[in-house]
Amino acid sequence: MMDVVNIIIPVYRVEQYLDKCIQSVIAQPYTRWQAILVDDGSPDTCPLMCDTYAAQDSRISVRHIANGGLANARNVGLTTLYGGLADPKSQYVMFLDSDDYLSPDCLETLVTAAHEHDAAIVNMAYRAVGVDGSIISEGSQGTKTCQVFASSEYLHHMCYKQKTESACTKLYRMDVISGNRFETGTLNEDFLFNSLLCFKEFNIIDMDYSGYNYLQRSGSTSHSGANKAYFDSIRNPLKLMRAAEEENRPELIPDFARVALYQIRCISFVLPLNMIWRGSKDFSDLLHVLHNCYPYLSQCTFPRGYKSILKFIYRLPKLTCSV
Image (tube, rainbow, N blue to C red):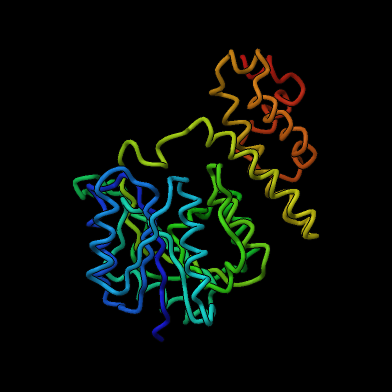
């Protein structure tokens, strides 16, 4: 059991954190790994740091590209990786953000679980850490116990926010990803990517283990672009509803509708008045998604009061959102 784990690391403006990230990979007792550092046009010393690591360790390679964002950098890594694969079933892939880092036994723990449970994807918890290394929140009890889910079952839990949609907390078997790529120019791309993967039938393991250390800092991708993230979080479920129709998977549609409706209710509480009354594109898109998802409202489970609020938004959108 020494399958190769390929780790794709997009790199952009993280010169303070990149050493810790890469060193956490190099220090893994599980040595059958390869890392692809995708320098996303970083304007600092990161390109030089990437080249230095590649010169020191033959398992590390670098791609220098023009800045195109996180999703594009991950896709460049995937395209590079698949170009040299002989047998995707004997290899895995992970995505590691370059300001985060792995726990010491992460790779061995995930690969072992994948083999023991014949899983195409292994999902772990994450530990939120501060810049000083302090633990802000611990995502697991550390028991390493595993729950086995069919992909459609995991997707249902993901739509209800009971399982994480993050790509960084998962070990993927390479044949499962196949031709799937992250959608560029959008946020909330992990949900879209993982949902489309779950249209296929396979096993997913959810493990009580925090193998990923998620750095909490201002200026990171996950802490920026909040308004765009809000609206992409309702546009993406609509895309998935249409994909489910095309793939003849009607049983998935209510779950995707639920995601959009839940987000619409949340967004409606924070919309600026000028966005509501001037008929902005974002607000028009919100109403468009609402009208497409509203017929599934009765099939969705929500906290108390959500359905009443959504009914008011549907009938009197400007007035309700303003109030």
